[in-house]
Length: 422
Ligand code: EPZ
Image 1 (cartoon, rainbow, N blue to C red):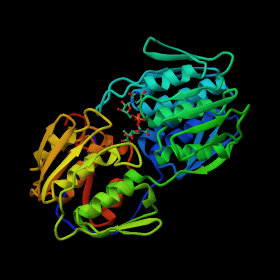
Image 2 (image 1 turned 30 degrees about the horizontal axis):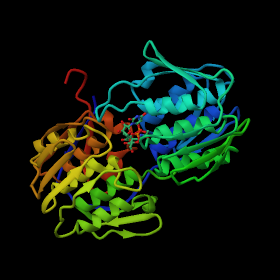
Image 3 (image 1 turned 45 degrees about the vertical axis):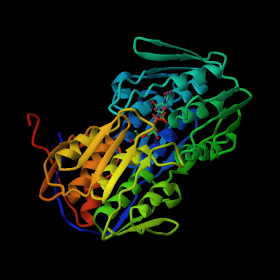
Image 4 (image 1 turned 180 degrees about the vertical axis):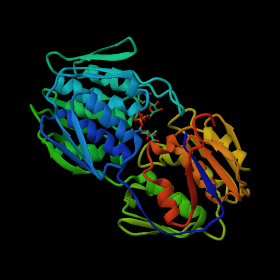
């Protein structure tokens, strides 16, 4: 299993380019199931989750090829409709094929995602909404079995809770449903808007893009399209936080600062003075970092996917920061690992109380999920001595070439693999 060995205490200087957004590319790849034409998605990061989605599409008869960051999906014109557990269990977002399969092939068999390190994460809201569009769904032998032999029909749907992939799944089903659908209380994450832009380019009829109410007039068929996904706001935010911790300075380029409003506000409150242009953020470590309390919420609020990295930042800030996780119920596994490096954190329910600043000292720590891994790398950058981050495969799911990008800024991160028995 790959690990990172990080030599801490170095200043970071220079420019880091942000990759395309994993969480935008995933639904856009799934949307290729909605047409028999070719779909080209540019800006797909070469990360493990994208490779998994390409495998899911291949299992469904699509042919995926990629050249650099461009993925081309060509329909295999098969009636295959089964996304197997071997793939879904490695990536919950595989469930994004459910809506498109139902809409275009009239049925889907998609393994029900199981437990997850950050919370229960059920998909009941995806299933309920698809039922409202006229599908019948049941769970059989661990799979969601969904059928709509006479096609889907429009419906007025209100999500009882804001769900990102739920909104995406149901939107992809509604664009080919007969008649008009109104989807209310939709997620407004930029990744949902990005998917809607692709669907519009494919000929879908959607009003209200970017708002929490999407009105969809179903069409008979969609055509192929070429689309470039938005830059990864979570990767950009992670590197901006690296800049706040040890930037001398760091410029995060090729990003969309307008997608990062809540983080920029938090950085300003912490005494960091980010310089923002239309497509870049430059961050320097301030003489004194101040503690800031944040609560994660749906977009445009503070992103849960930046919570772990913010906890790492607050270990170096003066005062007490209360970081409350309102989206997922158990997303604080990084706190215990950060404490191994010397952080002072008390977790009580959904709040982590971080008291800083504490000098961190290198140790071996274990990554538990994608963003927790990023938090441990950030802490390793400021810790004195050597930090080893184990289970880097979590990081490889969503960060493209993280060690290469950080090393180019002056970090010292070595990937190593001690072999199968260590
Ligand atoms: C998306 O997950 C992202 N994944 C996650 O990114 C992100 O953390 C999350 O949205 C929140 O922003 C992708 O886009 C592929 P949700 P998703 O449905 O869609 C509850 C990362 O690190 N809920 O918006 O699965 C759920 O349990 C990842 O890149 C239900 O109860 O999240 C949670 O409490 C991790 N029933 C809340 O809603 C449902 O049917 C929001 O989850 C669906 C969700």
